[in-house]
Amino acid sequence: MLYNHLMPKTRTQYICQQCGRVSAREMGRCPQCGAWNSMVEEVVAITPPPAAAHATRGLGASSTPRRLSEITGDAEERMPVSIGEFARVLGGGVVPGSVVLIGGDPGIGKSTLLLQVALEMARNSTVLYVSGEESERQIKMRALRLLRAEGQARSDDETALSIPENLLLVTETNLGVILGHIQQAKPGLLILDSVQTTYIQELDSSAGSVSQVRESASRLRELAKATGIAVFLIGHVTKEGAIAGPRILEHIVDTVLYLEGDRFQSYRLLRSVKNRFGATSEVGVFEMRERGLIEVTNPSEAFLAERMVNAPGSAIAVTMEGTRPILVEIQGLTSPTSFGNPRRTPNGLDFNRLLLTTAVLTRRLGLHLGEQDIFVNVIGGITIDEPAADLAMAVAIASSLRGQAVRADTVLIGEVGLSGELRMVGQMPARLREAAKLGFRSAIVPRRLRRLEPWPDDIQIVEARSLRQALDHALLGDNPTEGGG
Image (cartoon, rainbow, N blue to C red; front, side, top):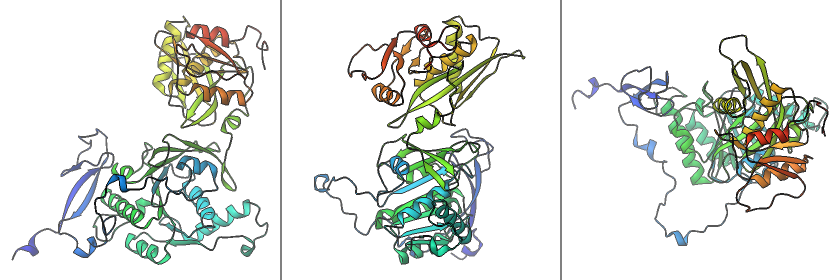
């Protein structure tokens, strides 16, 4: 006890930002997940914090075990959101006491989207917007721009704009001070931009470190569960596209959303990768305009608006984004290579699926692709992860190589196997109904072995057993205008 003043008060450790592995020494590669340059230095206090720091921890004062039969199982009452695409991704609305994490590339529109949500939600309940990256003046200027673009006022008079009185704004990064503002304002919705700029004064590490992000998210989760306040957190992403900080951050929150899109295009996709209150893999489509992010209620029609009919190398696929079918145009282009190794360049499709499809076309159909550069692109900036687009990709490549156009009124749905066979994909009736609603008259699909649900009556179904049969039905003759719709 006499030598306590000589003992160190802090120690240095290294934590992997990807998996959270803790190491006592610096390493270039994480021994657990194998990620390079992911170990960050962190200074940890050895002396425990005061007991008062733990006084407010916990999800509630009473934690008595109860019988499951005594707990009400009614559906959670949600706070309505007038932005339909945002409500779709959340599962129908904002659940009180939920914690939602939104990530995305810099400048993609995360702050703009949540400011639009704050302006709408503040008309019915109190909203506290906490920013640690922008000044209050910057946020006010963005809010006025959004309101003016809606046509509420054409002059520079701020009094003519209907700014909600229940929208509170503060710039703060100290979590203790933020909790004090929350206790005073008692909001129904809290927006924090961003969780990486928030810090806890009791911890010696800097803001954005693994311990600060983990502890800040944990305390905000406890606040949400104890008070019923809905919390929205904006998270930074790494250069690989994952949310920065420890992986446990995504486990702490209830919902994880990613705002995706090409910054050189106007479309943005809000994708749900985790949702405890709704369907996962749901997607909402927005378009970036002067008035902010505008929801696209019919994304299939928007993605096909600039399609060039009867152009070789263009095929229409129907992909499922959560529970929503979306029609997208897949373009393929083949060109004689000038190098020893031909290039395979996909954009919006998986590289391995492109290699598989090219191998099947070469081996099973005898197409000479060994000396051709192949480029495949999904129009609109959307990314397709499911194998249902294999058939459309294969037909687009063959169409470009042969110089024959694909029938303009036909969609192609199916997975391509290594033997050249076509395999059925899920939710086929929903895909076909969406294609028929947009005016397509025929669809080429794999031959089904079990007839569980009837096909829609307003679209002609062509069942093909192999990729060769599908090409015979899909490609026009030598005259590209033949059969064009």
